[in-house]
Length: 292
Image (cartoon, rainbow, N blue to C red; front, top):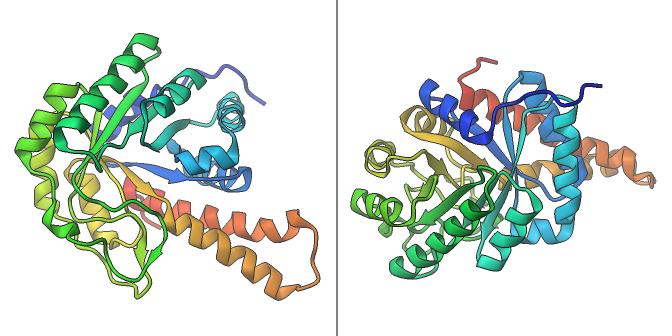
């Protein structure tokens, strides 16, 4: 076991990804099985990875628990980072910053543009005052709000895509480190299997206008071609959540279907963990341009 291994900061990892025109995978988890699966996939490919936990996931998992797991993974030499995904209040931002997260997302996309700027600036100021190089991300435009299976896309999603002027003004007035714009993806995925169309040309324009790395939210359900193009065009981090949840559930269901009398959790959960690891590896390869 290795301890105190020097590793890049998240800022350095994102800068390196941006220079290489690839993306770092960001995968949401809500328990240690999913966490271990994501770390194993990234470690096997020798790639950095971001663990995301939303407000709901943090409440279920426990903030201290996930922080401890990340610390242990780093002590073992894994390049793992922790992000407080979709945080809707300044108090939530403060909790994550104080707990030692590497990054936080203040999601004010449901607010007016002006109020989003105001509260995001407050989040940035708090993180900077605490020191430690914590990155702050914000979201603008309409991407949807839930990582689940949907019957239809969020209403009017394609009519509220982020403009270059909005991206430039938002970054200038908030000093965020990263920006998640609306470019055609959506949180969750369609039950019917339809693929939202990612506006790749818009990503290129927004990256130039924003002047900071872009983050693609709602990667689940988009085509591999669009995700690969997004990474090459300016999205240095790509989020996957719904596909992780689906893989986990299907793996567990398959294990129980194969042995309906099994009651040892570590046995049927192991199939869910393997499914998550396989799904994570697939996306990590795609984002980094690694052939199968």
